[in-house]
Image (cartoon, rainbow, N blue to C red; front, side, top):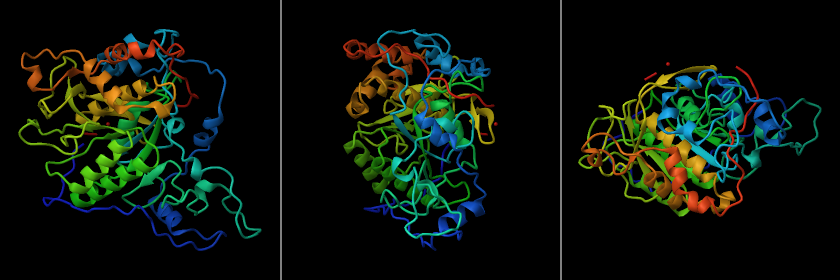
Length: 425
């Protein structure tokens, strides 16, 4: 997905993260934020989002009926690395960890989708029981996720799974489809008898809605920067960003430099203009920051898509043509572009992040090295002018990390299975 940015460079020094909300009491009267959500007709968050955090014990594995239609998983070597139904497959490699938080800065997410709802990041500071400071007999919200209070003091009220920066509300529901599609490629639940599987099914998605199809490019850029700052502040380890434009923006670069200082890996789309980013940069993918991975898109024959941007400044390529994934309304459908390719790389990065004994040990430099050095070659003779390294390979990346993982006592790989329940661009 590509947005049209403002022609002039946006040069804001600081993006304020505070949302001013007028609280009207603790009774039945709705807060401003709640009224906005109601007007937008966003659905409520499922209780399973919170109950799944405390789940433990085995669950039966069931084949995902659409998984064979996801050619991208085969292309990246997903089934060579592991399978949702057979374990163990590769000794010394850990399964995807729920401790890895991926911020998907996009059009939001369908947090009610059966493939996505149990893989949502939950803000611990805005969840759990809450007692009103004023005694009342009224039936009111007694949970931090809906009490109209900024419980964690981060400047956002009830931001339990992320934030909608377009409408300034806590529920980043996807009314477009793109963000849900990207999230499914990264983390759709595996072996639950429904749909398909993401590349890293147990990873947690922090949903940050920045994109407004009816808004100006300048507004989308402002929202992008706000979303980056939120991800930086709230503990994301990886940021997936599929938008961009031809104009650099000082505020955006500063936000990503802050991401770098916090050790966050940023996976960014190279763009869909069919041009060389060496000649005409595409931002944020083209910022010269070592925590950014720029991604081009390929077809089933490992050929670069005509629409994909390319160049030596673009590190890797991944599947991007007619990719099947999740859509709002518990649906599935196909999309194409460097957005989808970026999501495959993000999923692989999350799998590699899961190999660290503790998430605090996460090192974006190591993950980026494993991803780039583990690629397989493109068939074109001039492939080095198309991308700097090659095509994403999950087995190759895991092999690169083998000397590191061999020293660990990690369990054999297995995709965690989740509870059962059952097109754009």
